[in-house]
Image 1 (cartoon, helix red, strand yellow):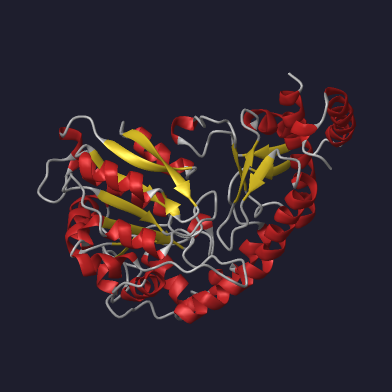
Image 2 (cartoon, rainbow, N blue to C red):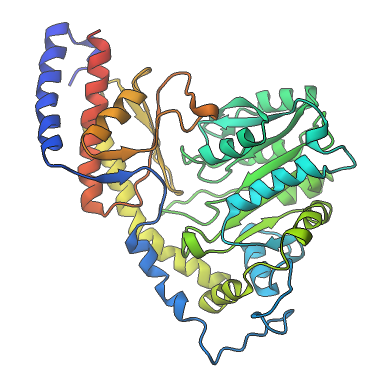
Length: 425
Protein backbone atom coordinates (compact mmCIF):
# COMPACT_ATOMS: atom_id res chain seq x y z
CA UNK A 1 0.00 0.00 0.00
CA UNK A 2 1.17 3.55 -0.75
CA UNK A 3 2.12 5.91 2.04
CA UNK A 4 -0.81 7.94 3.29
CA UNK A 5 0.99 11.19 2.45
CA UNK A 6 1.14 10.16 -1.22
CA UNK A 7 -2.60 9.41 -1.52
CA UNK A 8 -5.10 11.92 -2.89
CA UNK A 9 -8.01 13.25 -0.83
CA UNK A 10 -10.56 10.80 -2.25
CA UNK A 11 -8.38 7.80 -1.49
CA UNK A 12 -7.76 9.09 2.02
CA UNK A 13 -11.50 9.54 2.61
CA UNK A 14 -12.25 6.02 1.37
CA UNK A 15 -9.58 4.57 3.63
CA UNK A 16 -10.93 6.50 6.63
CA UNK A 17 -14.47 5.36 5.90
CA UNK A 18 -13.38 1.70 5.79
CA UNK A 19 -11.41 2.03 9.03
CA UNK A 20 -14.28 3.85 10.73
CA UNK A 21 -16.50 0.85 10.04
CA UNK A 22 -14.01 -1.49 11.68
CA UNK A 23 -13.64 0.93 14.58
CA UNK A 24 -17.40 1.07 15.21
CA UNK A 25 -17.52 -2.73 15.24
CA UNK A 26 -14.86 -2.78 17.96
CA UNK A 27 -16.73 -0.14 19.96
CA UNK A 28 -19.92 -2.18 19.79
CA UNK A 29 -18.21 -5.06 21.56
CA UNK A 30 -17.98 -3.11 24.84
CA UNK A 31 -14.36 -4.12 25.40
CA UNK A 32 -12.30 -3.27 28.48
CA UNK A 33 -8.61 -3.85 27.72
CA UNK A 34 -5.74 -2.30 29.66
CA UNK A 35 -2.23 -1.61 28.34
CA UNK A 36 -1.66 1.45 30.52
CA UNK A 37 1.27 0.39 32.71
CA UNK A 38 4.07 -2.13 32.69
CA UNK A 39 2.53 -4.52 35.19
CA UNK A 40 3.24 -8.24 35.18
CA UNK A 41 0.23 -10.28 34.09
CA UNK A 42 -1.33 -13.07 36.13
CA UNK A 43 0.66 -15.71 34.24
CA UNK A 44 3.89 -14.04 35.36
CA UNK A 45 2.74 -13.54 38.94
CA UNK A 46 1.85 -17.23 39.19
CA UNK A 47 5.48 -18.11 38.48
CA UNK A 48 6.39 -16.79 41.94
CA UNK A 49 3.51 -18.21 43.98
CA UNK A 50 5.75 -20.74 45.74
CA UNK A 51 7.64 -17.89 47.38
CA UNK A 52 4.68 -17.68 49.74
CA UNK A 53 5.57 -21.18 50.98
CA UNK A 54 9.26 -20.44 51.46
CA UNK A 55 8.84 -19.62 55.14
CA UNK A 56 7.15 -22.11 57.46
CA UNK A 57 6.88 -22.47 61.22
CA UNK A 58 10.00 -24.65 61.10
CA UNK A 59 12.14 -22.06 59.31
CA UNK A 60 15.42 -21.09 60.91
CA UNK A 61 15.08 -17.32 60.98
CA UNK A 62 18.82 -16.74 61.43
CA UNK A 63 21.03 -15.37 58.67
CA UNK A 64 24.75 -14.72 58.41
CA UNK A 65 24.40 -11.35 60.15
CA UNK A 66 20.98 -11.47 61.79
CA UNK A 67 20.19 -13.62 64.85
CA UNK A 68 16.44 -13.47 64.17
CA UNK A 69 14.81 -11.92 61.08
CA UNK A 70 11.52 -11.63 62.95
CA UNK A 71 12.93 -8.97 65.25
CA UNK A 72 14.14 -5.37 65.00
CA UNK A 73 17.46 -4.31 63.50
CA UNK A 74 19.49 -4.79 60.37
CA UNK A 75 19.20 -1.33 58.82
CA UNK A 76 21.13 -2.24 55.65
CA UNK A 77 19.27 -5.50 55.04
CA UNK A 78 20.32 -9.11 55.57
CA UNK A 79 23.68 -10.17 54.16
CA UNK A 80 22.17 -12.78 51.83
CA UNK A 81 19.93 -10.22 50.14
CA UNK A 82 22.78 -7.74 49.83
CA UNK A 83 24.89 -10.43 48.18
CA UNK A 84 22.14 -11.35 45.69
CA UNK A 85 21.63 -7.73 44.65
CA UNK A 86 25.39 -7.20 44.53
CA UNK A 87 25.68 -10.05 42.01
CA UNK A 88 22.79 -8.64 39.99
CA UNK A 89 24.44 -5.22 39.76
CA UNK A 90 28.08 -6.31 39.71
CA UNK A 91 29.12 -4.64 42.98
CA UNK A 92 30.39 -5.81 46.35
CA UNK A 93 27.68 -6.49 48.92
CA UNK A 94 29.22 -3.82 51.16
CA UNK A 95 28.02 -1.25 48.63
CA UNK A 96 24.41 -2.46 48.73
CA UNK A 97 21.59 -1.18 50.93
CA UNK A 98 18.41 -3.30 50.82
CA UNK A 99 15.12 -1.55 51.52
CA UNK A 100 11.40 -2.14 51.21
CA UNK A 101 9.38 -3.29 48.21
CA UNK A 102 9.81 -0.20 46.00
CA UNK A 103 12.90 1.12 44.21
CA UNK A 104 10.86 4.21 43.31
CA UNK A 105 10.45 4.87 47.03
CA UNK A 106 14.23 4.63 47.43
CA UNK A 107 14.75 7.05 44.53
CA UNK A 108 12.33 9.48 46.16
CA UNK A 109 14.17 9.15 49.47
CA UNK A 110 17.51 9.71 47.76
CA UNK A 111 16.34 12.97 46.18
CA UNK A 112 14.78 13.99 49.51
CA UNK A 113 18.09 13.28 51.25
CA UNK A 114 19.98 15.46 48.78
CA UNK A 115 17.37 18.18 49.20
CA UNK A 116 17.48 18.14 53.01
CA UNK A 117 21.01 17.00 53.93
CA UNK A 118 23.20 17.67 50.93
CA UNK A 119 26.31 15.72 49.94
CA UNK A 120 30.00 16.15 49.07
CA UNK A 121 30.31 18.93 51.64
CA UNK A 122 27.82 21.08 49.74
CA UNK A 123 24.71 22.74 51.10
CA UNK A 124 21.42 20.85 50.83
CA UNK A 125 19.86 21.32 47.43
CA UNK A 126 16.91 23.17 48.92
CA UNK A 127 19.33 25.85 50.18
CA UNK A 128 21.04 26.37 46.83
CA UNK A 129 18.32 28.28 45.06
CA UNK A 130 17.05 27.20 41.67
CA UNK A 131 18.30 23.75 40.70
CA UNK A 132 17.81 21.54 37.65
CA UNK A 133 17.79 17.88 36.63
CA UNK A 134 18.47 16.40 33.20
CA UNK A 135 15.75 14.15 31.84
CA UNK A 136 16.38 11.94 28.78
CA UNK A 137 13.24 11.82 26.63
CA UNK A 138 11.17 9.91 26.03
CA UNK A 139 11.55 8.60 29.56
CA UNK A 140 9.87 7.26 32.69
CA UNK A 141 6.98 9.38 33.92
CA UNK A 142 7.52 8.50 37.58
CA UNK A 143 11.10 9.78 37.46
CA UNK A 144 9.74 13.06 36.20
CA UNK A 145 7.04 13.03 38.87
CA UNK A 146 9.61 12.81 41.67
CA UNK A 147 11.62 15.79 40.45
CA UNK A 148 8.47 17.80 39.77
CA UNK A 149 7.26 17.07 43.32
CA UNK A 150 10.42 18.66 44.75
CA UNK A 151 10.12 21.69 42.47
CA UNK A 152 13.30 20.84 40.52
CA UNK A 153 13.36 22.21 36.99
CA UNK A 154 13.57 19.44 34.40
CA UNK A 155 15.73 19.94 31.32
CA UNK A 156 15.16 17.48 28.49
CA UNK A 157 17.93 15.63 26.65
CA UNK A 158 17.04 13.62 23.53
CA UNK A 159 17.62 9.88 23.49
CA UNK A 160 19.65 8.32 20.69
CA UNK A 161 19.99 4.62 19.72
CA UNK A 162 22.96 4.41 22.12
CA UNK A 163 21.47 6.30 25.07
CA UNK A 164 21.12 9.99 25.96
CA UNK A 165 22.84 12.46 23.62
CA UNK A 166 26.13 12.63 25.50
CA UNK A 167 27.40 15.70 23.66
CA UNK A 168 24.49 17.62 25.17
CA UNK A 169 24.83 15.96 28.58
CA UNK A 170 28.54 16.74 28.82
CA UNK A 171 28.09 20.34 27.72
CA UNK A 172 25.27 21.05 30.16
CA UNK A 173 26.75 19.23 33.15
CA UNK A 174 30.19 20.82 32.80
CA UNK A 175 28.91 24.38 32.33
CA UNK A 176 26.00 24.72 34.77
CA UNK A 177 26.47 24.13 38.50
CA UNK A 178 22.71 24.35 39.07
CA UNK A 179 22.32 20.97 37.28
CA UNK A 180 22.39 18.46 40.12
CA UNK A 181 21.62 15.17 38.41
CA UNK A 182 20.22 13.10 35.59
CA UNK A 183 17.70 10.28 35.43
CA UNK A 184 18.86 7.15 33.58
CA UNK A 185 17.31 3.77 32.81
CA UNK A 186 20.45 2.31 31.26
CA UNK A 187 19.27 -1.15 30.19
CA UNK A 188 16.08 -1.54 28.16
CA UNK A 189 15.10 2.07 28.80
CA UNK A 190 11.51 3.02 29.54
CA UNK A 191 9.84 3.28 27.03
CA UNK A 192 12.17 2.67 24.06
CA UNK A 193 13.99 -0.43 25.28
CA UNK A 194 17.40 1.10 24.47
CA UNK A 195 20.51 -0.19 26.25
CA UNK A 196 23.27 2.35 26.70
CA UNK A 197 26.38 1.59 24.62
CA UNK A 198 29.76 0.98 26.26
CA UNK A 199 30.89 4.39 25.03
CA UNK A 200 27.85 6.07 26.62
CA UNK A 201 28.51 4.38 29.97
CA UNK A 202 32.18 5.37 29.85
CA UNK A 203 31.26 8.97 29.04
CA UNK A 204 28.87 9.04 32.01
CA UNK A 205 31.62 7.71 34.27
CA UNK A 206 34.02 10.38 33.00
CA UNK A 207 31.71 13.39 33.40
CA UNK A 208 33.26 16.54 34.86
CA UNK A 209 30.29 18.24 36.53
CA UNK A 210 30.39 21.88 37.48
CA UNK A 211 28.46 20.87 40.62
CA UNK A 212 30.44 18.76 43.13
CA UNK A 213 27.15 17.27 44.33
CA UNK A 214 25.96 16.19 40.87
CA UNK A 215 24.46 12.68 40.98
CA UNK A 216 23.47 10.17 38.30
CA UNK A 217 20.28 8.30 39.20
CA UNK A 218 21.01 4.95 37.51
CA UNK A 219 17.67 3.11 37.61
CA UNK A 220 18.68 -0.37 36.46
CA UNK A 221 15.12 -1.65 36.71
CA UNK A 222 15.48 -4.16 33.86
CA UNK A 223 19.00 -5.40 34.59
CA UNK A 224 18.12 -9.08 33.96
CA UNK A 225 14.80 -8.70 32.14
CA UNK A 226 15.69 -10.19 28.76
CA UNK A 227 12.97 -11.27 26.32
CA UNK A 228 15.14 -12.03 23.30
CA UNK A 229 17.51 -14.86 22.39
CA UNK A 230 20.07 -12.11 21.69
CA UNK A 231 19.91 -10.01 24.87
CA UNK A 232 21.68 -6.69 25.31
CA UNK A 233 24.63 -6.29 27.66
CA UNK A 234 25.31 -3.23 29.80
CA UNK A 235 28.78 -2.13 30.84
CA UNK A 236 29.20 -1.98 34.63
CA UNK A 237 29.25 1.72 35.46
CA UNK A 238 30.85 1.22 38.88
CA UNK A 239 33.87 -0.43 37.29
CA UNK A 240 34.23 2.60 35.04
CA UNK A 241 33.70 5.05 37.90
CA UNK A 242 36.42 3.35 39.91
CA UNK A 243 38.88 3.79 37.03
CA UNK A 244 38.19 7.55 37.15
CA UNK A 245 37.99 7.91 40.93
CA UNK A 246 34.37 9.06 40.66
CA UNK A 247 32.51 6.39 42.65
CA UNK A 248 30.41 9.02 44.45
CA UNK A 249 28.73 10.20 41.23
CA UNK A 250 26.16 7.36 40.93
CA UNK A 251 23.25 5.92 42.87
CA UNK A 252 22.11 2.66 41.25
CA UNK A 253 18.65 1.20 41.91
CA UNK A 254 16.95 -2.12 41.28
CA UNK A 255 14.24 -4.36 42.71
CA UNK A 256 12.47 -7.69 42.38
CA UNK A 257 9.21 -5.91 41.51
CA UNK A 258 9.05 -7.53 38.07
CA UNK A 259 10.83 -10.70 39.21
CA UNK A 260 8.47 -11.85 41.99
CA UNK A 261 5.57 -9.67 43.15
CA UNK A 262 5.48 -5.90 42.49
CA UNK A 263 3.43 -5.36 45.64
CA UNK A 264 5.71 -7.50 47.80
CA UNK A 265 9.17 -7.45 46.29
CA UNK A 266 12.50 -6.20 47.60
CA UNK A 267 14.37 -3.08 46.42
CA UNK A 268 18.00 -2.05 46.76
CA UNK A 269 20.50 0.78 46.21
CA UNK A 270 24.11 0.31 45.17
CA UNK A 271 26.37 3.23 45.99
CA UNK A 272 29.77 4.29 47.27
CA UNK A 273 30.56 4.26 50.97
CA UNK A 274 30.25 8.07 51.11
CA UNK A 275 26.84 8.04 49.44
CA UNK A 276 25.55 5.20 51.62
CA UNK A 277 26.66 7.04 54.75
CA UNK A 278 24.70 10.09 53.60
CA UNK A 279 21.59 8.00 52.99
CA UNK A 280 21.90 6.27 56.36
CA UNK A 281 21.63 9.66 58.07
CA UNK A 282 18.07 9.68 56.77
CA UNK A 283 17.22 6.00 57.03
CA UNK A 284 18.46 5.76 60.62
CA UNK A 285 15.59 8.02 61.66
CA UNK A 286 13.11 6.70 59.11
CA UNK A 287 13.18 3.01 60.05
CA UNK A 288 14.78 0.54 62.45
CA UNK A 289 14.99 -1.90 59.56
CA UNK A 290 13.04 -2.95 56.49
CA UNK A 291 11.15 -6.22 56.06
CA UNK A 292 13.83 -8.83 56.76
CA UNK A 293 11.26 -11.62 56.58
CA UNK A 294 10.56 -10.73 52.96
CA UNK A 295 14.27 -10.58 52.24
CA UNK A 296 14.66 -14.02 53.83
CA UNK A 297 11.69 -15.34 51.88
CA UNK A 298 13.29 -14.26 48.62
CA UNK A 299 16.65 -15.75 49.56
CA UNK A 300 15.14 -19.13 50.48
CA UNK A 301 13.10 -19.14 47.25
CA UNK A 302 16.02 -18.30 44.94
CA UNK A 303 18.90 -19.81 46.96
CA UNK A 304 21.47 -17.94 44.86
CA UNK A 305 21.83 -15.68 41.84
CA UNK A 306 21.73 -18.65 39.46
CA UNK A 307 18.28 -19.32 40.88
CA UNK A 308 17.25 -15.75 40.04
CA UNK A 309 18.48 -16.14 36.45
CA UNK A 310 16.64 -19.45 36.05
CA UNK A 311 13.48 -17.77 37.30
CA UNK A 312 13.88 -15.03 34.70
CA UNK A 313 13.86 -17.64 31.95
CA UNK A 314 10.30 -18.47 33.01
CA UNK A 315 9.36 -14.81 32.61
CA UNK A 316 11.00 -14.75 29.20
CA UNK A 317 8.90 -17.73 28.08
CA UNK A 318 5.75 -15.74 28.93
CA UNK A 319 6.85 -12.38 27.54
CA UNK A 320 8.70 -13.22 24.35
CA UNK A 321 5.54 -14.30 22.45
CA UNK A 322 3.72 -11.15 23.60
CA UNK A 323 6.41 -8.76 22.44
CA UNK A 324 6.79 -10.64 19.17
CA UNK A 325 3.04 -10.42 18.61
CA UNK A 326 3.03 -6.66 19.30
CA UNK A 327 5.90 -5.85 16.94
CA UNK A 328 4.61 -8.30 14.29
CA UNK A 329 1.19 -6.60 14.40
CA UNK A 330 2.75 -3.16 14.08
CA UNK A 331 4.83 -4.37 11.14
CA UNK A 332 1.88 -5.99 9.39
CA UNK A 333 -0.61 -3.17 9.93
CA UNK A 334 1.50 0.01 9.82
CA UNK A 335 4.69 -0.70 7.91
CA UNK A 336 5.11 1.31 4.72
CA UNK A 337 2.32 3.80 5.48
CA UNK A 338 4.69 6.52 6.67
CA UNK A 339 2.63 7.21 9.78
CA UNK A 340 4.47 5.43 12.62
CA UNK A 341 7.82 4.09 13.82
CA UNK A 342 8.42 1.72 16.72
CA UNK A 343 11.14 -0.02 18.68
CA UNK A 344 11.80 -3.76 18.84
CA UNK A 345 13.53 -4.17 22.21
CA UNK A 346 15.46 -7.21 23.42
CA UNK A 347 14.12 -6.82 26.93
CA UNK A 348 12.33 -4.61 29.41
CA UNK A 349 8.60 -3.97 29.56
CA UNK A 350 7.63 -1.61 26.76
CA UNK A 351 7.45 -0.95 23.05
CA UNK A 352 7.76 2.73 22.13
CA UNK A 353 5.65 3.93 19.20
CA UNK A 354 6.06 7.32 17.53
CA UNK A 355 2.93 8.13 15.54
CA UNK A 356 2.47 11.00 13.10
CA UNK A 357 3.33 14.31 14.73
CA UNK A 358 0.29 15.88 16.40
CA UNK A 359 -1.61 12.57 16.62
CA UNK A 360 -0.64 10.83 19.89
CA UNK A 361 -3.40 12.37 22.02
CA UNK A 362 -5.97 11.56 19.35
CA UNK A 363 -4.79 7.92 19.16
CA UNK A 364 -5.07 7.53 22.93
CA UNK A 365 -8.53 9.15 22.86
CA UNK A 366 -9.76 6.87 20.06
CA UNK A 367 -8.41 3.79 21.83
CA UNK A 368 -10.12 4.74 25.07
CA UNK A 369 -13.46 5.17 23.31
CA UNK A 370 -13.03 1.67 21.85
CA UNK A 371 -12.23 0.16 25.25
CA UNK A 372 -8.42 0.13 25.17
CA UNK A 373 -6.64 2.06 27.92
CA UNK A 374 -3.10 3.30 27.18
CA UNK A 375 -0.64 5.41 29.14
CA UNK A 376 -1.59 9.02 28.52
CA UNK A 377 0.02 10.78 25.58
CA UNK A 378 2.79 13.03 26.87
CA UNK A 379 3.51 10.86 29.92
CA UNK A 380 6.99 10.04 28.63
CA UNK A 381 8.02 13.71 28.81
CA UNK A 382 8.46 16.08 31.79
CA UNK A 383 5.29 17.86 32.86
CA UNK A 384 3.33 15.53 30.54
CA UNK A 385 4.15 17.69 27.51
CA UNK A 386 5.40 15.92 24.41
CA UNK A 387 6.36 18.81 22.09
CA UNK A 388 5.60 16.71 19.00
CA UNK A 389 2.53 14.95 20.45
CA UNK A 390 3.94 11.78 18.93
CA UNK A 391 5.19 9.23 21.49
CA UNK A 392 3.01 6.47 22.90
CA UNK A 393 4.22 3.80 25.34
CA UNK A 394 2.75 0.35 24.71
CA UNK A 395 2.84 -2.10 27.62
CA UNK A 396 2.31 -5.68 26.39
CA UNK A 397 2.70 -7.52 29.70
CA UNK A 398 -0.57 -7.21 31.63
CA UNK A 399 -3.42 -8.39 29.35
CA UNK A 400 -3.79 -12.09 28.48
CA UNK A 401 -2.30 -12.64 25.04
CA UNK A 402 -5.71 -13.06 23.38
CA UNK A 403 -6.84 -9.68 24.71
CA UNK A 404 -3.49 -8.18 23.77
CA UNK A 405 -3.99 -9.20 20.15
CA UNK A 406 -7.39 -7.48 20.04
CA UNK A 407 -5.97 -4.39 21.76
CA UNK A 408 -3.14 -4.13 19.25
CA UNK A 409 -5.54 -4.49 16.32
CA UNK A 410 -7.61 -1.62 17.72
CA UNK A 411 -4.47 0.40 18.39
CA UNK A 412 -3.36 0.09 14.77
CA UNK A 413 -6.79 1.09 13.49
CA UNK A 414 -6.66 4.17 15.74
CA UNK A 415 -3.15 5.12 14.58
CA UNK A 416 -4.35 4.99 10.98
CA UNK A 417 -7.53 6.95 11.70
CA UNK A 418 -5.71 9.71 13.58
CA UNK A 419 -3.21 10.08 10.74
CA UNK A 420 -5.97 10.20 8.10
CA UNK A 421 -7.90 12.80 10.08
CA UNK A 422 -4.80 14.99 10.27
CA UNK A 423 -4.05 14.62 6.56
CA UNK A 424 -7.64 15.47 5.62
CA UNK A 425 -7.72 18.71 7.62
